[in-house]
Image (cartoon, rainbow, N blue to C red; front, side, top):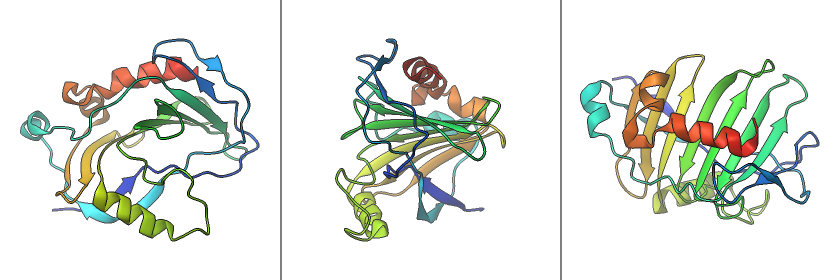
Length: 205
């Protein structure tokens, strides 16, 4: 069976002069309210070594259960526009950017088309306060994964591929794979398509 590299969403802070001011709201569907300017940061994905064999087909989709629920309360946004490719990355952290329990990231190309959706549920892979040079990032990620269970959902619109996965916490990895439409509309996951639309309203993207 083919194996696929595991990508775990992680929060990494980096300077970014093109970041738009963060936005906050008290509920996912409420119009965003501008928050005071903060130091510019960017959300970055971090790859974690490992492999898994996702299950496919109707039976696998019926049986799959997200081990970590989506805690979609509150919400703060950050929108970053890259200077080279012209892409836009919007990140929503729930309930807030500090000690979030759910993080959604949307990536748009230079024409404004949505190309990727990433969702991470659980304890942030990188603890609050971590700074480069204070320790090995790989060690931090491995320790977090060994201790905490997380659920991730990734949708690649260009490849028409969706993956939902439970990982970590000393338990076996479970995952399903299908088309974007199959995964984004799966009621057992929320569904992601509805959460995506609420995030777009929250962040104004």
